[in-house]
Amino acid sequence: MKLPESKELFSKLKIYTLLDLALMVPSSYSDCRLAGSLEVGKVQTIEVRVIDSSTFGGKFRVTFEHIATARRIYATFFKATAYHYQKFTVGSRHYIQGKLEVYKTYLQISQPRSIKEVGSIIPKYKTAIKESEFKKLIKTYITEVNLYNEGLDSFEVASLMKLHFPTALEEIYAREGGYKDSIVGVLKFVEAYNHIKKLQNKRVDMPPLCVLDNPVDEFINSLPFTLTREQLATIQDIQKDFKNQTKATKRMVVGDVGSGKTMVILASAVMAYPHRAILMAPTSILALQLYDEAVKHLPPYINVALVSQSSSKGDYKSADFIIGTHAILYKDDMPQASLVMVDEQHRFGTQQRAMLEAMVSCEDKRPHYIQFSATPIPRTQAMMDSAMVDVSLITTTPFERDVTTKVISKPDFVPLLTHIKSEIEANHQVLIIYPLVEPSEQIPYKSLQESFEFWDSRFDGVYATHGKDKDKEAVLLEFREKGKILLATTVVEVGISLPRLTLIVIVGADRLGLATLHQLRGRVGRNGLKSWCYLYVNDAKNQRLQKFCTTTNGFDIARLDLEYRDSGDILDGTIQSGQKFVWLDMANDEEVIQKAKDRATML
Ligand code: ADP
Ligand code: MG
Image (tube, rainbow, N blue to C red):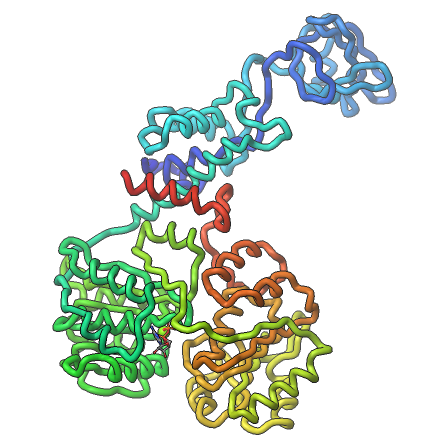
């Protein structure tokens, strides 16, 4: 159930669905049930009569008699006000609430409150609006019927009702304090389920411009290698998508660097034939690489054209497969296409991606749309995301890359130099990543500028580039042919292939997220050459980095990243600002998410 948009209160609370509201559980409860017996150490509500009072040194002391047991209980108000004096007159009866303690042999109650009504447990909420207003919302919307209508089962409904309308705290809290496991389980589920339902609602399916069904087997068999199981499965996913007459494809293919996504792109262009396909890549270099691979592997009857700022090949107006950069978006004579693809999609803005789709849409019909991402995501994330866009994962690479990863620090610098020399002698290349271009007081590592002189005076063929460098692409291209050592910032995340690169040093690796480190490490050893990744840090005992050294699988690393998400040493902001869940643990709650997905798809 979507809450009425007009309600100002809901926007103040930043909530949109009934389950958003249900998930705003009380921060605490006030137990106003009358206690049967007196229990020391516990906050209790008891009925008393005032039998004596006195003022001493500004303190107001009251002696109560517990009605049920006739025991005496003493209270001291350190900051007594007129209210206290008027309230606790001798002879008056009260319901008071406070923690019972024993001092010597006397029973004491600290700072008791006099309360009007007894018999219930009162939930306390901390929200952006007045508590009384919030409680009204809860009363109005959080009903069994409404919760059942959301698709929750009887246990989940009962649990949420207990949280908001408690009758016994023993049903909510575990003996050791904290919610009972069963309650936490329900909250996790509801959080996942609510999130998935919201994503589902965002998904709008439109009919395709046309069905695509050109056979692809011949292309697959013509390749110089056998496709991996996951490459084939992904191609099959897409093949199915293309044949759907009512929904245009919306798919995200997620595969690590080197997992062979290009072959999936090419296979898709083949399946689209004789209809036109367009592929957008983030840089001219990448577009050119993709163009070269397309020309090399695609059957000759598919005409390929390249459109980028720096170079164009073929006639895009008549081509079957147009490959280009965002330059494509600014051509006003781009022909109609039935399939659009975006490679390295995270390097484009949402707007650019939407523009591409809109360019070739026709009334309510949409092109088939496939995005490719080299940023592995945890399985749990993929499960969630697939509510909005279909996801194919390619979690393995065609060949194991032989990369040794090590955390190093100052004492290892001389051996590192020796190693760099020997790699260069073997006609290999070296990449050194600095945390920033110019020196900074805030960062305990050398900058690219400060270090350039050191390398340049000792080695030939030293190149440098960084994110804001206008000649970045030219520098990279020249380095690829002639360079020995490239100094850079994280800019080389761009998927340019440097086949002779066998050694990467990442200075200040403790400042980077694991996803970024993984992308950087993905630059070396792409042609099966034995390679090394050195993580240079001031403190080599970094546990997060040590774990990183033990795996090269991007999907494992995405999971590790989740586990270390809150660790303090990540400063580069590369942590995806993904959905923050209160109850759900994305690293470990795969089962809960699966259950929520199953339930949501049943709707
Ligand atoms: P990415 O997923 O990073 O885009 P690429 O498509 O560039 O990866 O593939 C990396 C390299 O692996 C390329 O040289 C490609 O030709 C090669 N390749 C792709 N699939 C296979 C395969 N199944 N077996 C062997 N090599 C493959
Ligand atoms: Mg690629």
